Length: 247
Image (tube, rainbow, N blue to C red; front, side, top):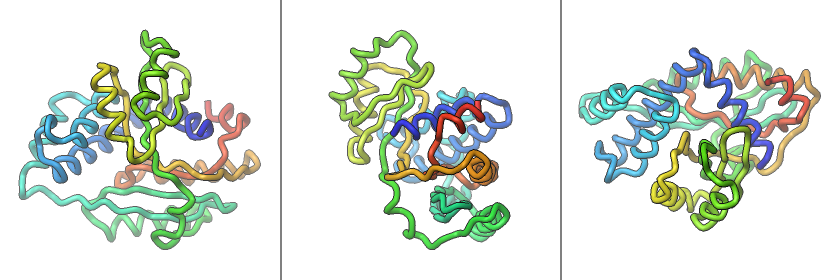
């Protein structure tokens, strides 16, 4: 999972810019809305909402924005959001898996198909690529004053399958089933969580030449700019050469 941790670190650095931060705010606000619809507006009784609020704090989303989003989502007359996935291929056979949240399915599928076509890819049928990814819990934890050895032992006790240290953060991986268990473990430890989410980790990655990899990343960036796209997963190999180009 080292390739995924490198990609996670790159995305985290990019999110520090103002334009990306605004996109991150929109994404978290949708997470909050979906969480309230699924489990109600009380964080103590809704683990999904607690996670979304924590993710909001991780991107410095103002407290009043979080409270406003919870109140709005609690309104029975508020616009309904749908969660939907799309799968397809970028150029050179790189698999792309998209998780979207939308209030207009026709608009979303039209935009997704357009991005695939514009960048030389193809939109596939749902379920055609899901087998290529494993769903894993991924937690990003600021290192701060945490002792690496002690922290690693604690989270392994909480169900961690792997722990990677990238720059100033720990990235913890759990099985899909242990996601909630790890969430409770970190809460009991009083650890600050920058981000927690379920990711789709590729079983195998595809290595391309640098120029071809950049073409795939341009497609991914176009998806990132679409407001309906919540998460993007792919199996492009993040080689050292490619990582150095992006930093």
